Amino acid sequence: MNSGCLFCKIAAKQIPAKMIYEDADVFAFEDIGPQAPTHILICPRKHFSSLNEAAPEDQAVLGKMQLVAAELARKNNLLRGYRTVINSGVGAGQSVFHLHLHLLGGREFAWPPG
Ligand code: AMP
Ligand code: ZN
Image 1 (cartoon, helix red, strand yellow):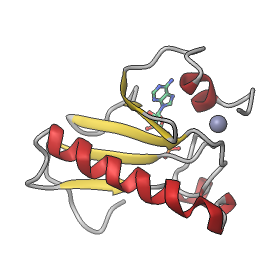
Image 2 (cartoon, helix red, strand yellow):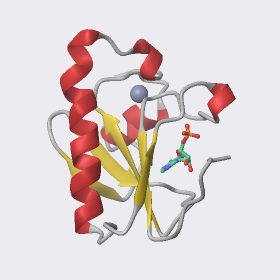
Image 3 (cartoon, protein in one colour):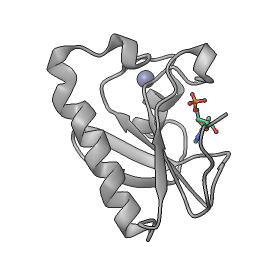
Image 4 (spheres, protein in one colour):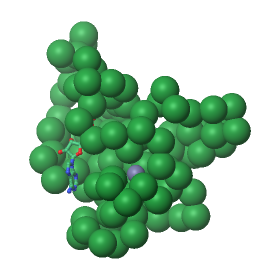
């Protein structure tokens, strides 16, 4: 745990969040500022600032984040279309520096993204 990290504090239940899914490797909760009817953040329990800090030994947890996203998309009836996004770095809009995968669904999405 990184004691200064918002999402580590959510994982430790020191800050409240609407938790959707938890296991030994990952946790998922509702985004506080949803950009779509469904907007869930899926995080590794291990603290990484961003994808830039991930190493080969983190392959399994990175894969699990994707599989949890797909499972939550099914559970939330998003199979017409959903989007998974990882913003990496300030230039991509990252604002919380604990790696997280956004799962967005329940509306139409444009491409290219903004
Ligand atoms: P990003 O800009 O990719 O780093 O995404 C950070 C996300 O975290 C944003 O969508 C925020 O709305 C969300 N967020 C920030 N604080 C909280 C919080 N306390 N609980 C839930 N989501 C949060
Ligand atoms: Zn953290």
